[in-house]
Length: 268
Image (cartoon, rainbow, N blue to C red; front, side, top):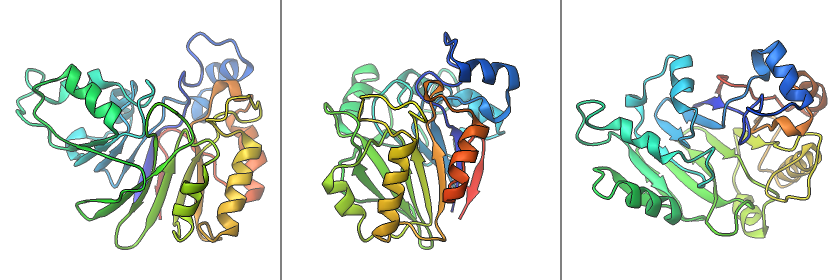
């Protein structure tokens, strides 16, 4: 299995559009891995995780074709993860397709919003619920509940094929007990975990700072979900987190953690 991190930024990206923060200034000047578009990912070129406002530029940048998607999985409805207007470009009159070539998997709130916007949209859409596994092709997908939004069932995804298991977690917060219990017997080959707040912790509990990231990682290691062989990468970094790419590397590399950046392809 492989996962490409198409975008690794927070809601306003890095640099932030109207931001004068130190991290935004650094990214504008230095570019490279400090430029972060809004978070999304692609598993084996066919499972698209979230459809944010930067999807077109991400796919064009990496030379990818959305016609390879067989599934579009949404984590939650925040605007940096769910840009429903982008769905219209999959169908006539923007091309000759009468039906979308992928299945949409999303929580009830997102499914309702799509139906409200496109009441006659010809797509296969299935409602997902945390802790209810489902199959898609050769993949077993297990949504677990994120500690992020109270008004909807926000997901992180455990994705398995016959050989490998991945946990993709943006907007996680520190999980509640049911999620920890659900992960107890899972062995991960790859963990993608957010670190939105970086070195600048806030009172909001729906995202992780660097210390909370380490705490979550240590607990996953202690319970056996993460082993020494598990590839661990970060994602969903905010310009408000007071951390450049190099600063994150210096902090996390001694823990065996790789810092995610836009376009990286991770095989496991």
